[in-house]
View (cartoon, helix red, strand yellow):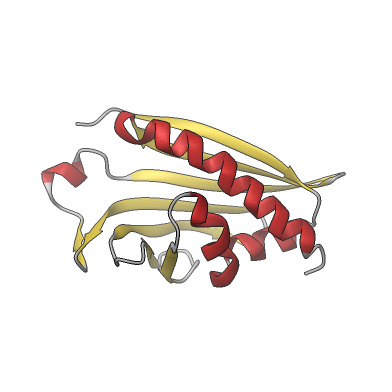
Length: 152
């Protein structure tokens, strides 16, 4: 069993919570800010509780998750349950079961200066350095996108 730990990132964005929530999850802006993880990243699915959602690279490989919880403008919880390789979902192999499920949570809070966004993510040791480097860059890009479009 892979050892998981939860790491946290946060950022203050000078835009209303509604703007941050919409910008973070809308397909076009999602593709933009997630380029910090991989150029051409995109998702297939819907940000609705109970829905399956795939986070993919241009090759079509990536991760499969379930939306464990989605409260508009407040909180999103993703339960990562597997990988997608060559178009095939893997949620049962020993290598996936070693780390799944892994959670990625987004908490949106209205503050005087706009929005505080907190990310809590479960990571395994082999991905910790990458995630620790990528999230701050992704959040900075999201901040820029939100602050350009302050109104919803």
